[in-house]
Length: 148
Ligand SMILES: [Zn+2]
Image 1 (cartoon, helix red, strand yellow):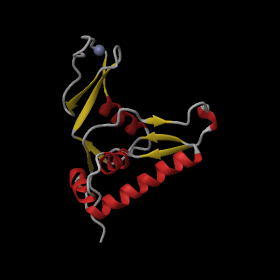
Image 2 (cartoon, protein in one colour):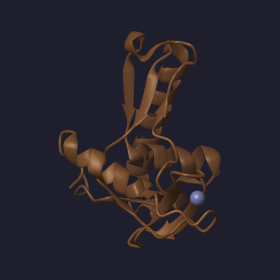
Image 3 (cartoon, protein in one colour):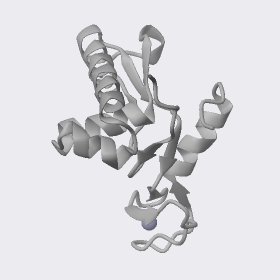
């Protein structure tokens, strides 16, 4: 039996949502979309090197669901590298725990709880600060309504 489709818990949004082969204009590239939950699975397993069980608990999903997710994510990243695709991180049925605030003036990045409002940049004092998790949520609403 399939478990009901639960929101996947994401610790921190990705700093970058777009990767491409260098020196090739975007118009010549096909795009592969990787969801934020697939990105989180890669981060937990292949970057932090957690076991599948612990990673699945952090994302609030079952171990078999996690295993399917990480296999899909790895296949997409491999396709992007082997075939030279643009890799775009976007969408997914997710909840963020934390977010990153990026100062648009000095590029300083600070970790904040997701619900925290953007404040002044701790480094340069600018109020020109963006909330990266919010950016993902906004983009998600415009694209096929994949955020719920
Ligand atoms: Zn700043």
